[in-house]
Length: 277
Image 1 (cartoon, helix red, strand yellow):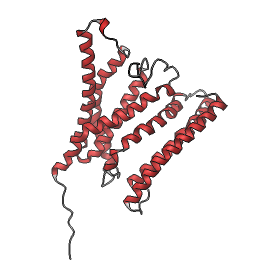
Image 2 (spheres, one colour; image 1 turned 180 degrees about the vertical axis):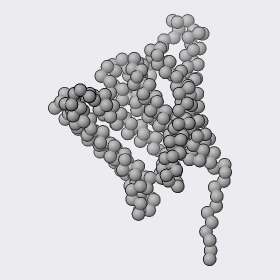
Image 3 (cartoon, helix red, strand yellow; image 1 turned 120 degrees about the vertical axis):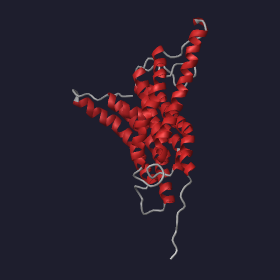
Image 4 (cartoon, helix red, strand yellow; image 1 turned 30 degrees about the vertical axis):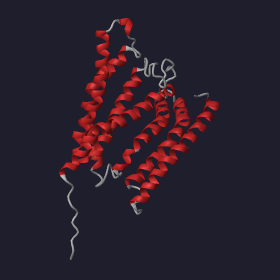
């Protein structure tokens, strides 16, 4: 009787995701961080002092709490993806990813300090308030510090499946960073507005927030959930992997388009009825 033997993967293959970790961490970090930056004016009514689309205007301005939240979420997301893709070498990949983000902020902070000490005050102008530079400095230490905890969570998540990242073929992550930006851009505003407008003392305000912001959030969360369910194989288990992947991609892309249209129409209607923006 013939016995099929699956050849073991060479040991060096486990280090490939670690080598690619700087690229993965950088792309996924910037994709979600850019979505946060682009969404600031739709989340904060006072964000009239920033212009995310301008290279010369401040992108964060005086809104340091929003910026700090976006940095931590974007970093955690990027390190989770980086560690999850590495599987066996999750901790090493997460640390390399964290150091990559930290290096970017170290260079940025270094240039700022050089300008402060080497140039006269009239020769440069800080685009952002000084406390945004403090956050830049904090990220030098925060990104690597988050790596170990994030890697443990990612490793537990990936261990539930014998392939890819939680059952998702790792090849999909070549393009999924684009979806992280577009879904982030569509979801950040309604989700954050929903939480910002929660009030323990005002039941009516909570109901209004659910009505106004729950529908546009659900319009994107449902296709996001089911799209990844098919990509990971938790849905459509009887199907061939190729058809599951096609279904997942179709749900994610089609759901994004339909969800954005639902969001646009619903927010126009909610604005006319409730006076929201």
